[in-house]
Length: 413
Image 1 (spheres, rainbow, N blue to C red):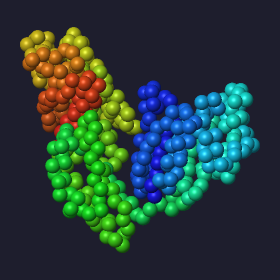
Image 2 (image 1 turned 180 degrees about the horizontal axis):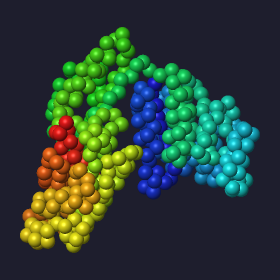
Image 3 (image 1 turned 120 degrees about the vertical axis):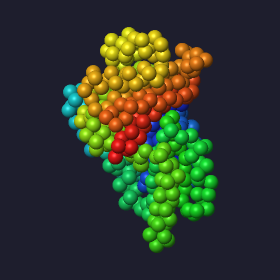
Image 4 (image 1 turned 90 degrees about the vertical axis):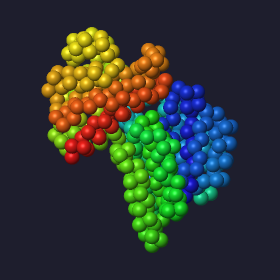
């Protein structure tokens, strides 16, 4: 089966809203063994949406549309879909009753405009939206499966899980689908891919996609096969080969993040950690506490942006900053040591650097960062130089800092 994702809304084209829906749907379909061959973004324009539907209905088996199901004049999706597939809109009392109950439960009065949300194309199956007012619907026309979902990310994601994927499973997905994603950090795409020159010949039928990000590269392996064809053993060998090729840069698989991996290692060692941040402005603490249960190991985070706060709060010797500078190996280790004394944590992590794009010098360029780490077995500082991009640098600084913790804790295993 081949799918096309169509996202609707002027806000997606003018940059006001980032289209996270398409990436989520693409990921979900890929994991289900469905190939996504096209992703289209269309403004709130009847003719352009009709043209997009015409092309999509000729080239794919599955169309998933998001957005444009609200009650206002620019919510055109339902009417265009109904007209294109020659299925008139029909008022559904059951939907209207749900809308009334939805507004009543929140102590609000429903606008007459919302009545239009109780209309769906004739012959369509209602896809219930338990988080919002706009229901979705499913149509089968000319052997093409059409799913129309609201554009609100939370609502769409819930409906993908509770309605769309179960429906697709019932329809019948392709043969057994193997999928594995391996995550690396601290290595460039070109350097990593040198190890995979012969991959295609070694593992026929296994697709390897290289997905670079700010911190490293994710390697996605996929294969459509069946047990009888011997696909599973081939895929398993391909995954093991990839793990070995990634080596020390491999930090996790599938849903793992560097912060979740670090959290699990801290729990395993029964360690608590405290973080002293300068150039990352609290981003490391933010990432660590994104993980549910992080209160079991995250002691505290302090943002010591100015020199006097480093001196006053973390007890970094003034002589160290005066002699070596705030961005230095000596200051980084003093910050890590200071945050341990401040919090009583088992491990201390620190970052101090120049995020840019200003503030650099010949000796200390923009992108320079020192990362310090201390526990009862380790006392180390690492130096990196990245780019001129401030936001990208902050992500890399925080990612590499977390990876230093990972490597130190794995070394202690």
